[in-house]
Length: 337
Image 1 (spheres, rainbow, N blue to C red):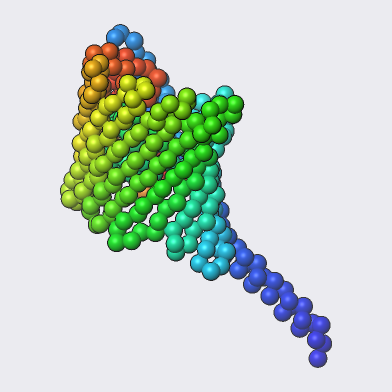
Image 2: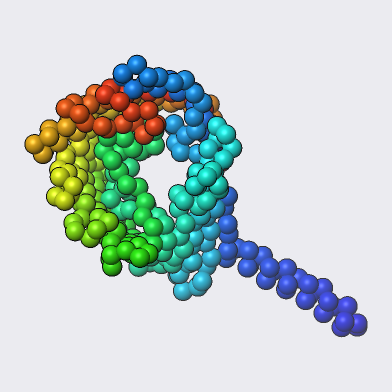
């Protein structure tokens, strides 16, 4: 018997099995959203524009996420996610470059939870997403407009607990790292507690960001949630934003609804900003929308939003065309991959 002839196939088979095992333990996924819409926007004071815009159903993005099994129930994870402007093909970075400015983090996950390091969503923002029928992603979304959410922090360390009895907790510390500035300036501390129980979602989020001169901190406190009745889903939120040094003390609140009708979903919100200072710079807003699924990955949508600023308030719709009573009507198509 020629043992060499037997050893070579066996060795090749062993190498093939080893290679398959290595691939099974590590994976990278490419994903993204391509979203474009036609918008008719107005300031409410005679200035208006009709234009093609990117990301009014969801922000357009290109991302990579990966995981590697390290053994012992521990995995390494990472996420790199770049903003993309579909209307002109540029990236969402400074000067139109493709930068991973939406998410850029690496971490470890196990049965004890997960810890991640880098640019990532603040816990308070993560809590607010589930309070909005528009997923905090368009001119129609209160967290994206008059509620003034700061979605992400640089230089952040976030710990996320495993889900226990429906509860998930997160805590964050983000280093200030202001070159040549005040020690500790712009550091960011946040936490959230979210509760999931079938159709019920409840959450509380807190964030405290030191101002540029290290004389005070801007603080957010947010509470709200949603309840899915099947035929209709209700949303609500109450948020406070406060910083004494900037004479800022305001409450933001809204209620929303989502109504699924087969492949069609109808949405609406109505809300208000209550300025608690002597300036009384309030605002009222409402929005309506519809999404129609063409497939599991592709839909067409419509959004309309309008704000009315009071007593010199300057709240806007995050579309660069602000005024005393800004409005925006968009119709677009969105594809997820």
